[in-house]
Length: 254
Image 1: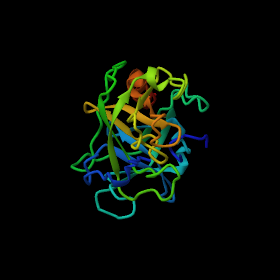
Image 2: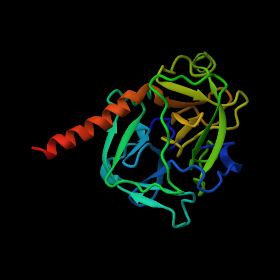
Image 3: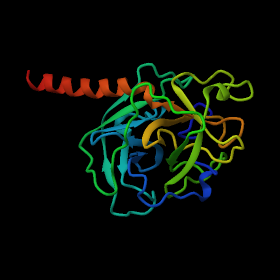
Image 4: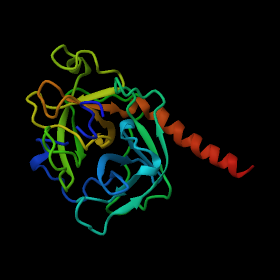
């Protein structure tokens, strides 16, 4: 997997000491292999659809999803296990530049929304989020850049948005940040998303503005975390879901 990719390269304070209140992040799902190894996070956007990063694509037959989870190692009775029916990576996704790093997952059966599971709201198409605005990123990723064990419980941290201009500076990503990306992190470093957090939510003003995508190391002051800018893909999300149901309805009448 390319270096810096966040599905195998956490949330750090690494998110070491920042546990989320159990079941307070209700829209997050754990994306796992069929032997229950956590690889990425995803975000429920309705009862049938999850948004995640395109680089989390391990194949529809190799993946399961768990909603309503807090601890990955303890059965809490709140979990809902789901199988994917369809994976739709963005057609313009480029694994070299990380541009277009977003994917939709259609579930085989609808998720049951309850006090442990809910959906995330999406921003309107093209909506911008201001530099310095505080957002919250959550996940089960590693708690240090050198890896180790993935933490068993969900972590969360608040981070400020970094302007694309600053993120693209010669001492930072030096022009690699596209208009389809967002940056977030502290100028002093110390808190970030990392490997295992890929596909997870960056929520600002109650809406899903970012999906954890890539970075350079974790929690490095020079390199903020990089997120796919969800608002740039809002029309694609809506059109993909609409066209799926239009096709299903058309096929059912043939």
